Amino acid sequence: NCAAQQQRQLGIMQQQPFIPTPLSEPTAEWLQIPVAKLHRFISNPAQFFLENRLEIKFPRTIEPLAEREQFAVSGLEGYFLKETLLQHVLQGQDLDSVFPAIRAQGLLPPGEHGKLIYAETANAVTEFAAAIKQQCADYVQLQDIDFELSVGDFCLSGRLNHVWSQQMIRYRCAKLKAKDLLRSWIDHLILNAIGGDSSPVETKLIMFDKVTGFSPVDNAEELLQDLLQQYWLGLKQPIHFFPETSMALSKKGKWELDQAIKVWEGSDYSPGEKNDPYYQRCFSNSSPLDDNFIRTSRLLLEPLLSHLQ
Image (tube, rainbow, N blue to C red; front, side, top):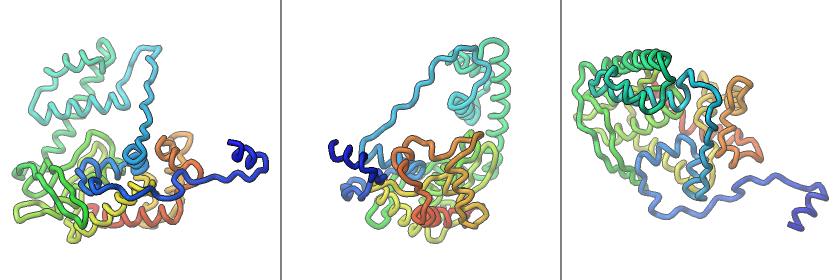
């Protein structure tokens, strides 16, 4: 403390990186990777590093009780409501019969206003479910695929569900985000790497605002190897990869920083990705949008974008 205060008085304080040198090599158990763990890594590499290697977890902020009556269902509650109703629709249940249970959970405003919001949400979810069913109307649904895939020194394991004779379906009752593309891309690479004669090699991603997908990949195992090398590096230090900002870097295939900086910094109308507490912890001392950021983003996103339909 004395030395730090002396440096402060002399005016020679220097900002140091959160992790100035990489941590030691992870143990061999980290080579065994459930696919859900790889999904979490690619969605927020900094959070994955802090939680798994340093055991740093930031508690979720608990919002105080509202001081006025609830008139809308938004945010996580709105997403939870849509996902819940979607599962009921896909299972062939009538949403009118589900209403009392949803009402009892306290997700809806009281009275007639709550009924109106439920009806609007139910209609939107029903249309979304119809879009999902339409994508696979002429196909035969296959059994879920349990896999254990060796990629170099790594072993990926898990289950691929929603697999049909012509394509694998991925969907979420929300607007398309970079993490949706990345997670679906990982599943798509695995599907192509383990593919047999009866397995499909295309993936369809269905979101509230967009339907997209991926074409067949000839070098899926090689691309998985590149991804897993970044995963291994990300266990030793936070890698410079941020899904939304990295995706903005690739806008129109130009790989220029201008758009990425806008997404990272945010604006008065939209918070920047840098406001994520895990990114703030790892990169608050200096901007991570450097050559390493460009190189890592291109490595992980160029193959994805080249197969995006």
